[in-house]
Image (cartoon, rainbow, N blue to C red; front, side, top):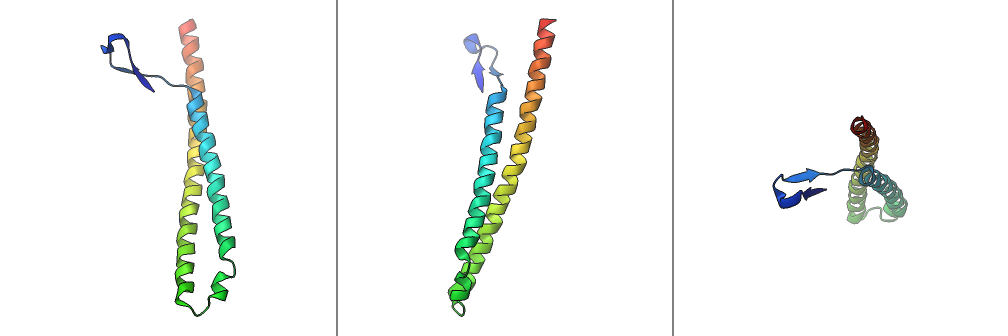
Length: 107
């Protein structure tokens, strides 16, 4: 978040805190779970469908669509897993920076 100092003479000043990063990490973790659950549900919804539609041109198309969506949801799941960890690390780092800065100011 940036804001202008009085009169805007000095330009924007970056303000940070741990809460937005921790919240983003939690949101990424929740999205990871949702993507994984959606992928599982999608597969379960297609169970037996291909067998019932055997011989129909739609069966191959359905299988292709299923594979495509499973791949996409797996990529989302994996990216959210990575983001959640990276954002947790940023939260920890900001906490360390805040502690070090507070100590330096106190000295």
